[in-house]
Length: 294
Image 1 (cartoon, rainbow, N blue to C red):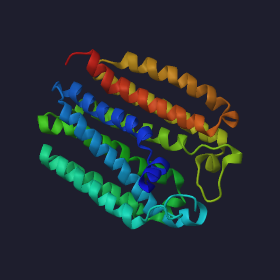
Image 2 (image 1 turned 90 degrees about the vertical axis):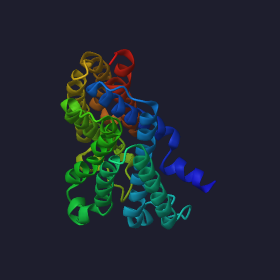
Image 3 (image 1 turned 180 degrees about the horizontal axis):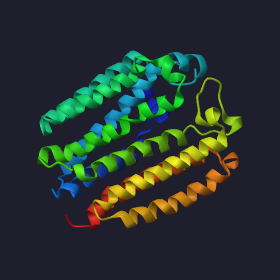
Image 4 (image 1 turned 120 degrees about the vertical axis):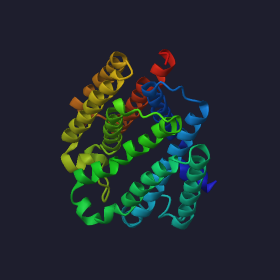
């Protein structure tokens, strides 16, 4: 029961699951369209399970990294209030890594190399690149260095397809990964936009850093950047126009709330970020794979 409570509070599976499924399936589908090699269902399953475990590991790494701050400023969270122990989370982290390793080795041994690269970056993130104080004083640098994990995980998901097939989808992959990086910024900034009355002591947010309105415009700029890279990536699979239309419609929704950020509830930015992410990955990979023959 306590682990069910933990996942509801810190890693809600029914919220993260569909987004990770879209994320990982899009990567496999996009790689398939670039290479012309049809994917098999096992590839989708392996990419999904591995990516879901990656994001779980990210959450656990944050629990360790922020343990001192949580105990001081957020005692209501699961670890400081004693619901679960860090040692228990460490065991889960290791079990997740073993599952990832076994799956990669069984499916395509070369995937282990890509997996180790992702683990290495995750490990560096967990220790704040051995420069915690320096990074904390430079929030923008902190943001982009940590968001690089998104294209790294996405690269692994694409590798689940192209590496076993022997194909190399380098054509549009750079733009696809750039869109993934920018979308990571959308999610991260969107979940840390608060109204003045919703700020908490000791909780760093971008609205506190830049001001509510400026932070909202930065978030909107990340949406625009994602759109540019996504449309370019989609052009490599002949689906640029539908992606452009879908994202522009969502941009109008986002623009409406960005203009009046001071009146927009914090959850609205998070909601738009989630819908945006789902629409991005569906339109960039899954829908064109279904509607267009290889």
